[in-house]
Length: 269
Image (cartoon, rainbow, N blue to C red):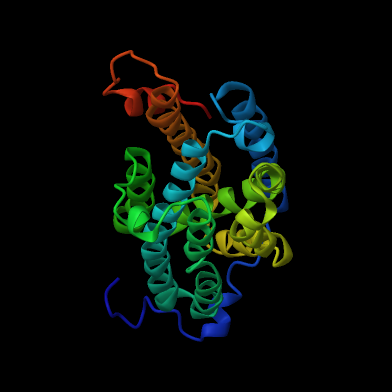
């Protein structure tokens, strides 16, 4: 965006009033889609139900999943900063709100690291781990929206996806993990979920997301973004299953070098 007075926001409070439609029907459609995809996830994705219901926890799977959560959070906060930059030029009121949200979320990786330490994983091990292929793809997808579409819409759709799905799935996961590992060993995860629920993060993110909807063309991109993000997440769970669980179970079949591509090619959502 060039430094042109005609393209700046003008009065910050007026900029914040431009898009105040809550798009309740669109949100209902999105939530219904996500509820459907959650059911489909548990029914069709290998090991999807493991952390929610297993009494015989695969500890290596649990460790690797939480390591990847940390690596994903570390990369997402860089993209969050790009969104703040976007809002500073167009809607600084929401920019301030998003900055506060990012501040609240930014260091949550430390909570997961504390949980991992209790099961024998050091910070050195966490940060020496290479992110999975699907994590790089998700990061690239969000950055593509910023760099080539000039909008944080993909990011906001992804964040809403995560916040909504977290509230619908993680309480039961954390409850089961606490019963298996000991409640003291999942304090970070419980704190993270509690923050999302108590602060109504999904509601807040939806409000920021809808501020980006300027016309029907923008509105029509929301559902496709949700589906794309869902496919990337499912591809991640397929990748971690292939790389951890199959190896842990002594599967002697050759490593499938195209597992990541096949996961995306299946188009879950």
